[in-house]
Image (cartoon, rainbow, N blue to C red; front, side, top):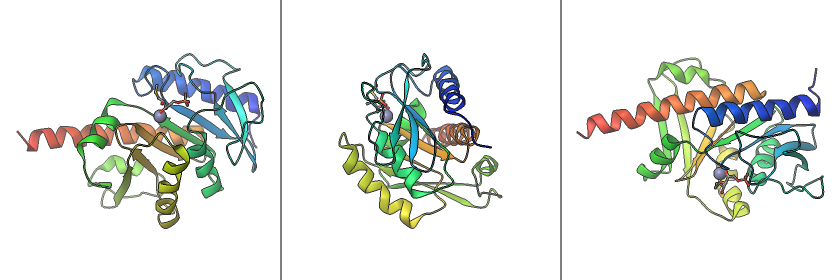
Length: 206
Ligand SMILES: CSC[C@@H](O)[C@@H](O)C(=O)COP(=O)(O)O
Ligand SMILES: [Zn+2]
């Protein structure tokens, strides 16, 4: 049974409180969304503190990222959400966060991809059933031109239909899932892996 707009808005508000509480969505950073229907998404408005979202701090957009609610300004990164809903029909929620570990790891690595392997926690990602699998996470250079950034992301998505998330260098993480709870689980798993990688690299380089 599909959820109402009010229920999806409440999930977005609750996600913001949780992610802000964990330190992964500081200040007005981050944006969150849920699929309303095949043709519409519910997104956070731009510039709000994500730990203090209210019921009016979300708006509906079409799947091209156009606001359907005049007077409300959609997230500056709306296109990165609608791109994902257009990419895969099974995606029901998208979360973007700005954690310290995502920011530091993506700046530390010069490579275009970070690969996680031999971590049991990889199994928290959809489609992964063993630590022996490789989870490849692309790192795209940051860009204030979101349309141009989306055009860099699209070829990766097209050639990696099982992609579970991506990093934007010095900026943050995007991940998703069929439900908000799936996207939240993947955020937690990514944060665990980012922290492990940073600790491993610090110890190896001592
Ligand atoms: C506080 S700077 C972060 C923004 O530039 C952006 O990256 C972000 O995540 C939030 O933008 P928003 O327009 O509120 O959705
Ligand atoms: Zn951002």
